[in-house]
Length: 65
Image (cartoon, rainbow, N blue to C red; front, side, top):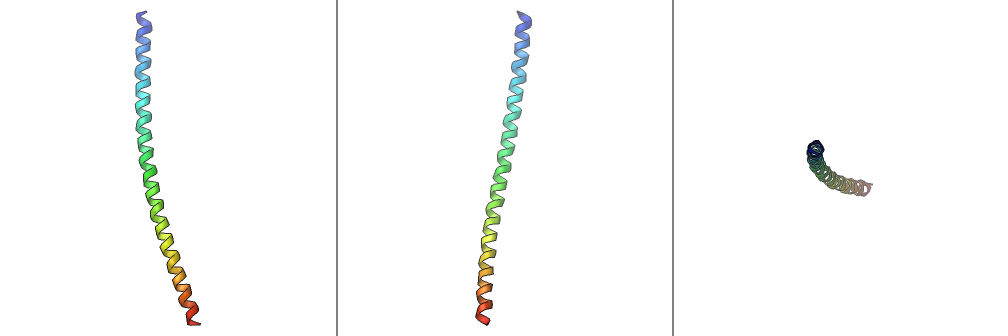
């Protein structure tokens, strides 16, 4: 009986450690995803700005003809 309890306690400790490891990894991945979203938003803004500049230059070019 004592042996079974000892074994169960060890398994519980392993399970708790695994859960903590998984929670830590999840937190790291969430931070990484936030960074990716921020970069994506920045790139979208930059692309929209470049597109607008391209349109402006195209209009300017056509007005010179």
